[in-house]
Image 1 (spheres, rainbow, N blue to C red):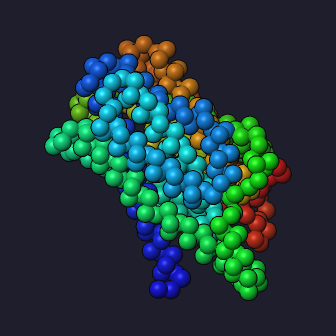
Image 2 (image 1 turned 180 degrees about the vertical axis):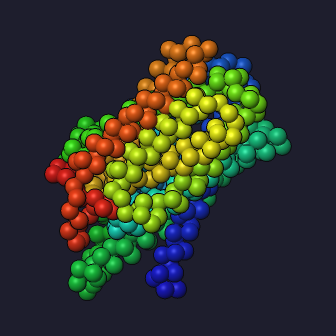
Length: 439
């Protein structure tokens, strides 16, 4: 098998593993929520489960980043998937009471945060070219979002035939399947290191490069100090990076308010809850289709500009939904909003990791995840202050704030974005030149 074919086969296996593990994440979340509702009958338990899945990515950002930078990211990913498999299998057998259900979500949330950070650290190593990273991130986003659609449907089917125990057992199997991709990733890293050595005129020392590939990402303890503080400092370094992230933080918080209020808005739209379900499905379809628009002229735009422009479109979609609650128009708005949501995720992730030094990718990735999850949590908390009968006004406000912040951010980032083309060989995102001090 040629090197190109091996690379394609490895890519397909990794993408399949990502899809299956994403389905597993959704199966776990939905099945545990259903079990919590069934076994306890308390909304507070289900609410606590959801928060337990969110909190680890925020609270443990520092340790997670240090672990991914200190050890081999592929090895950490393998251990994490194995632990997720064990937790899901144990939950299927013994997680019945409120404490065990919440603890299960807490553990799965923690391991999930580690796995996401590993993926962010591995993609730039597996695909060093910035334009390739953008394409790979686009494909991964579509695959991940397809998993979000398949997961809940699979839970419904499994629960109907074997209860939540069967769903959680299948969930454990998805993590076991994802483990198959880890040896392939490890071998791929070795091949990538040899290829870099050949390009640098050092192909005569493959053994040394193999050792480098195995140990790359394993830094001395002194180089992994600082944790989340260092990750945040690097994440927010540079005028363009600060303008981009500040805009995203505001828009994510504003649209998170909308996400909480939308179920209360369902009674005010034609079709009620049925229409609400169709709207959510339409947004999910947009999430799958969105990354495919990152081709042609759009792919050549600075990723910061694309991310912030997409954030403005998300706000506009919610603004239109609140202002004109007519089903056909809302469906169009949700399709565009879902596509923009996926584009924002891809462009922002590529922007953050494109010029990030290899020895801090774990900490920057963990800081990135903690920042976004904190924004979501702030939005959820703010939504709790709005009365249920003010849902429409809350949606208009949240959508308006996101659209205004995204539009202002778009003009601001275009103003600070450097115009000269990047020097040949520079490690930057497509059309983007690194600023002084930007990781």
